Image (cartoon, rainbow, N blue to C red; front, side, top):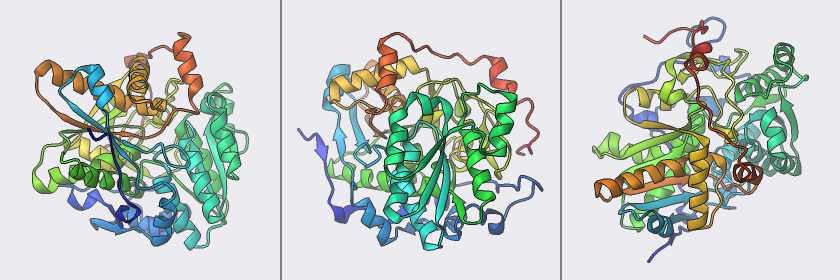
Length: 453
């Protein structure tokens, strides 16, 4: 009985997979926030190093991973793949369940896969300082770690509700040398504008992005770094899915279903795109399911249209499934999934019905996370429990139908800095949030961004 499938350092992929090369329909171009015309490299240069801008628009199937990045990856990569025998037994399911475990990274999640790459490219172009946002703190922790590895300064705008809910994430960032600011703050024009309108705002990723982008755009020595949504970010994350392809081969198996939590797309893309490639190029029928919170259901209830990536409207307009850039989700504990929009690649794939999405309430997710912890021993981050909940749904469906399935999911991070969330669950303080039609359409109805034909 094999429980764990390990790779060697030499098995770390040498290239990232760029799904844009195999998509049947290309994405619509991003638009300039002022002119509403397609943007060029010069429009992104104030925020990103040129090499990342090139990757953002690249149509090459394989993008080489620099040796300096692979050297840092070796601190934790390759990550293990596990067969969840105990969970299968608990559920009495004919389904085989595998999970890729990214919680062994220094930051405890999948986020360093792109953080290390982004910091490397900024360092190579002479950048001294980065700014970013973070929701639950996984991205901020990862970028803090990466900046420490390459000697860059970092300023993190952390969504205020998570800043207070997850203090140890802040301490992690401080330990690696980052400055952490609760967002909305009084340190940027964007933050002051939000506070003037809503002094008690719990914050959102969109607001934190506005603050971070403003800081980068108004300081010549500073660039901006984003942990999800953008094409190059999703591409970097495929290092984990490419490892999983090799590990599934070693197990003599192949997934029928691939699952991951969904906030902006990096987690889902990382595990699913290397398997989706077999659908696009070889005609396989792998179901790729994105698991999102019902309180922030952009994939299942949002509209596909152009929208800003931030609340104030400073970023380029992206063709995305969105709830409106001014949407402020309920303060659930899965802070990393509380984002109003989806990345352009994922949005196009969903529009083309090449992937699926399911929305889940947080009580079902915590129940799933506890079952998983009792069966497999790992306490998952609140974000990761969304993926586990979908896996359990699909495993029980396989039992009901009497059809064996092979399910793979990305256990994107551990929850050892999120125990207050579990404490709230056990104390009965957590509630499901049922988004009303009024809440759902409140900010979609006032969008004045270009529509998608």
